Amino acid sequence: MISLKDLSFRYRGADRNALSGINLEIPDGAFLGIIGPSGAGKSTLTYVLNGVVPHHYGGDFYGRALVNGLDTVEAGTERIAGELGSVFQDIDGQMVAAVVEDEILFGLENFRVPRDEIEDRLAAALEAAGIGDLRRRTLSSLSGGQKQKAAIAAIIALRPRIIVLDEATGELDPASSRQVFLFLRELNRQFGITIIAVEQKIMLLCEFARELAVMDRGELVLHGTVAEVLQRPERLEEAGVNIPRVTTLGKALREGGLYGGALPHNLGEARRMMETVVPECRNAAF
Image (tube, rainbow, N blue to C red):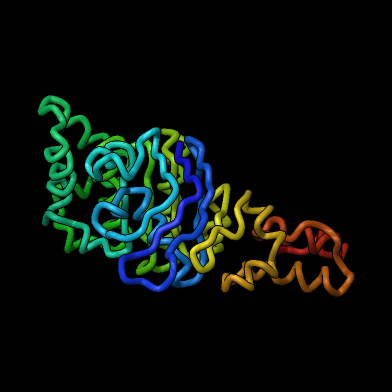
């Protein structure tokens, strides 16, 4: 479980807080999407979770951040990494080896995993990621989606209970991005791993995350289930978040007095909405 209490942080030399008064509880097994405009504090929040703030980026830290009972200020980043693994947008910058299996082995050896466990963990991580056939491939020969899976495999080989991704699909096309999120959902469902994904692609989050946290200028301005958050389109727009087109359509129909139900956030809900607005849609092919 992650618990953030009255969390604020200002980078050394900055003229304003990067985070201000964050209170957030993330239970075990959650799949949380974090979204907001550039400069909202999303990346800084992930740095707090993995201990990079304040251990590597100094500044004024107030409040408390607990990751599975570890105080991130008191615990070192290596100890936190035993509970929480991070995947970043710049995958090439995160990789330290030339071959997939070596990338996974690097983490296992650095965390002093017993030698007789290493092969089993390596094989299990490759299988979970669906990249067993890429074991001896060079990382430079992989597609963007395959690299992301290799990076996540290197993390899950360490068996963390939480995985944090900071815009990890930012450089991927829609198909590759969805492939990565399908894998994350399987990890979440099958192994109960908590997933926290900072992402700009709100439709992707709406499809896979169960909860959304919206940040704006260092503050947490909305938090709830995907459906609950999308019922506040005006606040999302005020925060600079582009809402899904189906939600925009529902908002327009509601403002025109043609629809009074909950705003949709996926195509299935949009179809049900249209069936109430235009009964003939019940027999239409979508």
